[in-house]
Image (cartoon, protein in one colour):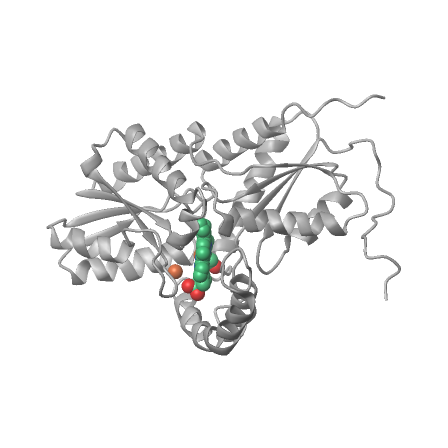
Amino acid sequence: MPLSHYTGLTGLSDDLPVKAGLLLVNLGTPEAPTARALRPYLAEFLGDPRVIEYPRWLWRLILHGVILRIRPPRSAHAYQRIWTAQGSPLRVGSEALAAALQETLSRRLPGPVKVALAMRYGQPSVAAQIERLLRDGVRRLLVLPLYPQYSATSTGSVLDAVADSFKTLRWPPELRVVNDYHDDPGHIDALARNIEDWWRVHGRGDRLLLSFHGIPERYTKAGDPYFLQCQKTARLLRERLGLDPAQLVVSFQSRVGREPWLQPYTDATVRELAAQGVKRLDVACPGFAVDCLETLEEIAMQNRDFFVEAGGQELRYIPALNDSQAQVDSLAELALRHMQGWPERGA
Ligand SMILES: C=CC1=C(C)c2cc3[nH]c(cc4nc(cc5[nH]c(cc1n2)c(C)c5CCC(=O)O)C(CCC(=O)O)=C4C)c(C)c3C=C
Ligand SMILES: [Fe+2]
Ligand SMILES: [Fe+2]
């Protein structure tokens, strides 16, 4: 039995040896593409009340009685299609982005800065990485969830994890949070340049589809701003690319369960576009900071097959921003802006 349930880190100084700490948080990913590794990952993810808003007792029964028996082998099969020698693309991409941001921010900030990457589900946890930053001398913390659009299911859940960690700390740091960056001009410009660069190399398709991860419609009706923020990102990106409304389509992917999610659904949309005679369809997923199962498997494989089966010729997935210079620069700018105004300390 510990003496106290507050974690006290001894030997910390009040001197601000480090100017600021930046905690990047992404969703998390299984440790291996196996049903055995998927089970604890999905149990933690789908057990989060922010993600599934059902009566707890009922959901526990369904989750443990049905979902965690059926879904792990199916998901494992999907992960096997995208797994790399370095591991899960989401982890590899997020780590590369964090390393590049550490490098850029160290150059841009006058004092030392520490960047850490946490996963909302799985390892390294938000609590472990906040502790690591404290040990490294961080007393001012900026949390940047790697979700451009705010949703209670994604960003909101990261904030829960930060709050839970703070509740256990004897001396928490000062805290700032980036709620979203869906309309940040630097971010929109980075997305646009990524698509334009890709078009320069591969040519332009007949239509551009922007596919965002979905959430249950019910959450939007209850006040989640996610749908509106996705629509705004899409409009700003369309305007920045100089496209007509008819040249760009928005849809929502990854529906789980039976209740209605945000619409139109991506799978129905790619089939419909093929039926309308679209031959070459370009797809980008601006809601994902780095490539992952949802882009590499669900879009670039599953939906590519749906499109071709429905009469389309080619579905071409335009990769996420990942650790591109455009993303590193726009997120560094964003972080620097959010770090401004922290007052100087007296001697
Ligand atoms: C069932 C409810 C889910 C909600 C609500 C949800 C929202 C949501 N998810 C992301 C980002 C990602 N989701 C990813 C995978 C994934 N998502 C769900 C379910 C919900 N997501 C599941 C069950 C899974 C796991 C895979 C599967 O079994 O199908 C991923 C990829 C993770 C990876 O390892 O690559 C991301 C990223 C957002 C942004 C969001 C709300 C806006
Ligand atoms: Fe998801
Ligand atoms: Fe999916």
